[in-house]
Image (cartoon, rainbow, N blue to C red; front, side, top):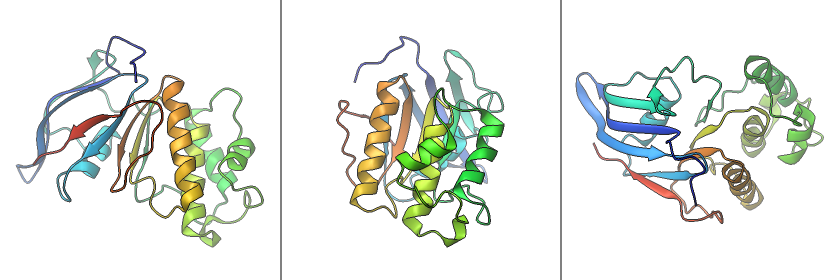
Length: 210
């Protein structure tokens, strides 16, 4: 895939995360441009999830440098630019998918032409828009979380095992969303134990090492 911008969207130099003064991963160097997808690879315990949580602003940088569009990294300023989907889906279980999306949109806005209703239809939750999330199956909960990717205007997606709890159609949906996001100038970092079927070109690979 061809980057759409000469300046990296996200750049890491000598990036490490420390726990009790011991490195969980790093030092790590990589650059991700708009229009690129990167697979984060490594053994269990190598820090893949930790890296995504750090980039999502949930953890602090231990050592090294992060830059965003060539400028210093400020995780508070990046809140609307970066969207993290992890094992914990970030859904309020007693609220419906529609209500969850309204809360998220109230914080970060929406993509042009997208509504909660339209994205819920796109992810296959027509008829379940107003059902409490706790009553949904694991796959439907994941689809409700995927709808947030479609609705919010974040440019960088951080997806930790996005294919988990999805059937074949759901896996195809994730790949479709990624392709559309990358084609539209977005970027994504993805961890996955399975093969990612991506038709937008060969993904970049970030190899984790502790």
